[in-house]
Image (tube, rainbow, N blue to C red; front, side, top):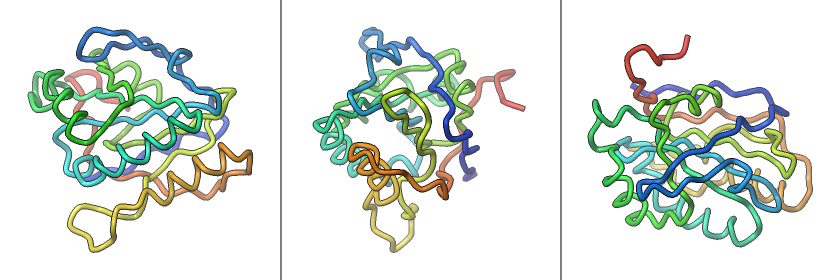
Length: 188
């Protein structure tokens, strides 16, 4: 069932994290941040919404990283209940979509809860001071629609951030599959 993001309040400081990728390499929020800020994307392998944007996200993030934006993907899904989201499958998905950014495992789901992430994909863009400037959709395309995947909304936000221009406060929530919470971890 499709859900929309919670739209965390603009100006919120990026919650800290220290997570490992499938190889065991740990990445922290501060180490991941770039000169212009940090994009935190809650992703997974099996969601049709992520599959729909996966390749374009790979192309866009390669460009953004070269412009000084730090990027991380975080998989918070319950891999026991959803084995397609297990770490070995994360490596395959990242390779297939050209994701060069760290793709991290939130096994306890505490990071997803701190960000109030609700769906995959769910995007949070922070400035150089790690204050939230954009949260919302990548673009208006959805699986099965005739709207092409362009990344227009998120690209516009990244372009404005890197250029030092103000970002629009009127932002459209992301939509996707709900995060697959472990029993007892579901947010209120």
